[in-house]
Amino acid sequence: MIDIHTHILPAIDDGSPDLSTSCQIIITAATEGVTKIIATPHYWPGVYQPHWREVLQKTEQLNNELSKKGNSITILPGMEVHLDIELPRLLEKGIIGTLNNTGKYLLVELPAQSFPHYSEMVLCKLLSLGITPILAHPERNSEVINNPEILYSLLEKGVLIQLTAASITGAFGRRAMQTSTLMLEYGWVHFIASDCHDIDKRPYVFLNGIEKAETILSKNEVELITRENPEKLIAGEDILTRSIKPIEKNVIKNRNKRGKKLSKQNFILRTWNLLTNKNRR
Ligand SMILES: [Fe+2]
Image (cartoon, rainbow, N blue to C red; front, side, top):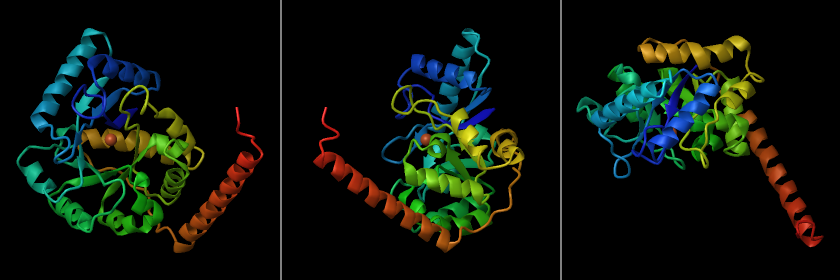
């Protein structure tokens, strides 16, 4: 399998702090059946600004270290770029780069809490330049969680979606998990990746997410988003898509109502436990 979104390059962003951690993460990935990993350090103007040249150099260095240790996993270059109106210019200048440097797919991260008004403009500009944006884990964006249909017209235009495996298993909370499930059910997901950062706070989770996806999709559908599409991505070829459906408004409304009911039940339970000292140790 191929993991298309990881922070395994040492000391370049908030991911792996050193070579030893990178190697530990890679060994875990290998035990989960991963053979190729795209290193996607953050590019976030004013926060993390590695030059594409540096990413290419560090990827080569990591591959050399791995072959010295006899590890057969291949690391490919990539970036996770924060949504910014400058993205087309940064690409043109060679400051940022596409996944596996094929000039075809760009991994784009939305802000965590908002869906900027210029999102569609930037993503459509990239499409017009022949670059396909892949939205990194939109199931964790609070605007998308509240209103997933804001993505539908972008999907129709050709924007793709990558889910984080740990979102599917629930590690990012109930609402991110529900949104992941909806996206899988409605044909919105094109890739699943680990987005691993380290070995403790954001450890390697990949196979568990895929196994959970297998309870929602057919075997062929899971095969498409976990094997066939990543293979095509690294080759710079067009990926295959499932037919997408809009998520009906009442589905979101009912989900939110259920969520509120659950929050209320949890609040009553917590208060009851406090009053009856059940949580006292
Ligand atoms: Fe990431």
